[in-house]
Length: 220
Image 1 (cartoon, one colour):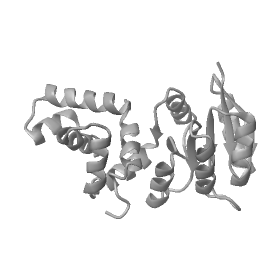
Image 2 (cartoon, helix red, strand yellow; image 1 turned 45 degrees about the vertical axis):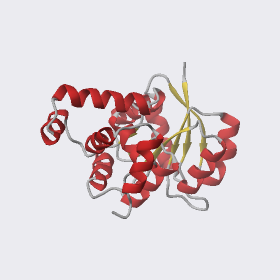
Image 3 (tube, helix red, strand yellow; image 1 turned 90 degrees about the vertical axis):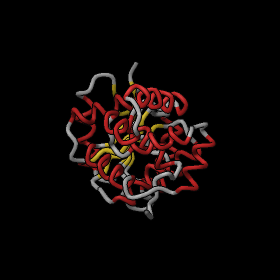
């Protein structure tokens, strides 16, 4: 079954380039385009795309406002931000608002396909450079009150929350086991239980979870 895409960018050359890339990826089709964030919600309601490819720096209604408006009425819609901007605050804000992924415009066709496949299968995707930025932010601190609330809301133990933080910070299972004084098997068990309880089975998804729960702070 074809996965339908809606492309939103105020540069016609960018839209044409992305459309050409998508044309060479089996199973995907661009069913609509918009040059302004103001058109997004109405066009998405009309076309019912599976994935929206969204620039976040546009005239009139920018991508962040358009993203918030879209997900307020169509929360099931999957949004992949496609941007040239690597500003940390902007990235974090897009993820907090509900974007399922963030891809830089200098991406390759192979990475675009990888990102689309991830979103299509219910996972998330972050460009490696973006993932590095988010993880670096995570290492600079957390909001303890938010973390406690998230732990209780999602039925995580204190140990699982600790391991979740380490996963988000890019630690390997062996590094976590050594640092916590646990066996590798115990860490793997905790990791499996965390993913099962959160119903998130990829590291990018866990990073986004921590952003949305504000376990990672923009101010830390």
